[in-house]
Length: 305
Image 1 (cartoon, rainbow, N blue to C red):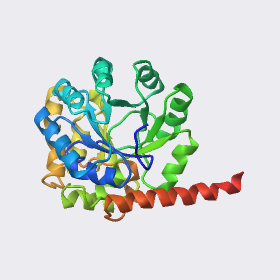
Image 2: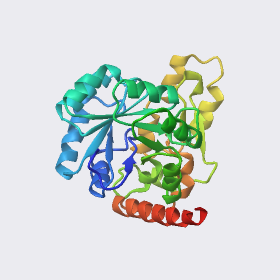
Image 3: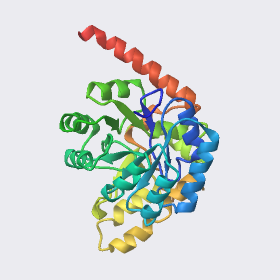
């Protein structure tokens, strides 16, 4: 469908998944995905143009539908004829006709069976079933529970996401019925990932209980690495603080982590699988390791036949 060598998507991580990381993943045979996040159209177009200069392979664009610039970015995706658009935090139905006419393959991220069915009815080419183990914005269902139910519910390809960082995760996803995987946290350690060195160190040093979920009160829970900011947010989240004040308290925290490396006041998004990320590698090495490890695991499963 997409013309990629390996069934591996790189997650669209806001402030993180830029043209350099995306091109490196695509050049290594996966699908790199630019993250629009809350960025305006100028930034997104610049990243698309730069990615086209760095790779002749397919790449995608992730659009966060809650962004105030979502309409603008959706139009740019069509104008630039991006190979793939993935969407999160909303229903992309109003953009589907425009994207399809531009030849864009649309693959929404879904947190539930109901949303997966809706995406299929709206004409999605595939869906990304993302469990709550992932970093960033999450749903309530785990990957192990969500993926097989989505696979049973729709007739389009399913990409599994959340808690996948090695070949065992890929083998598990395929066993659950998925056709591919989306991986975010593992690529935080990539040489081509331009996050602050402090961010990479936090991910590489993370243990199995290193992350926490905040933001449930506002209906948009987020998983990040525990630090002073996360603890303070957790303390005030269910006090009499207003939603507006809570939003303001969290504003700009991801940028402080990604760009400034502020270990106390930044928001370091990462999935529960961060404990398996233990070294820095380039994207080609990461993808080769993933595929070789998956082959080894799948071959080992022959004993169960």
